[in-house]
Length: 124
Image (cartoon, rainbow, N blue to C red; front, side, top):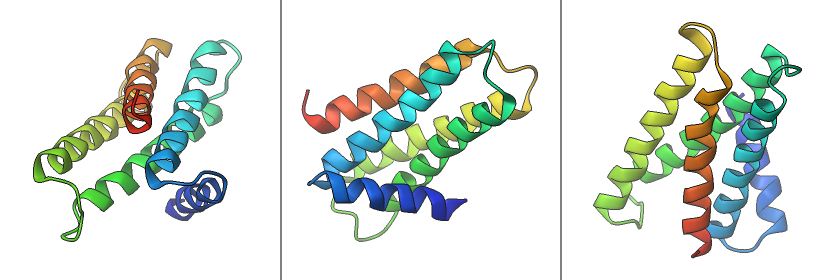
């Protein structure tokens, strides 16, 4: 499954030019998938929910892995912030999938987070 996230990352890399644009595009793709499940909650399946959450989780796993590498060019404070956001995403995903009955509102924070980070990466 981790390989699928990496493949999606590489496929998107071929379409856009800079790493920041690539990361922004992937975050927007993940946000769109989560938003679609939320918008179509009554007709979405559990599998569609899992697929959207897993894509988002894999993407954040890649981000967290990149910022925890010793050779990361980012300042320590930004690295820590990204790692903290990644842990939040992991916890939110676990909560949605495994604790209680999932609710569409639980996806809102993940969609907004991805969109805000993507906008920041695009310099908006």
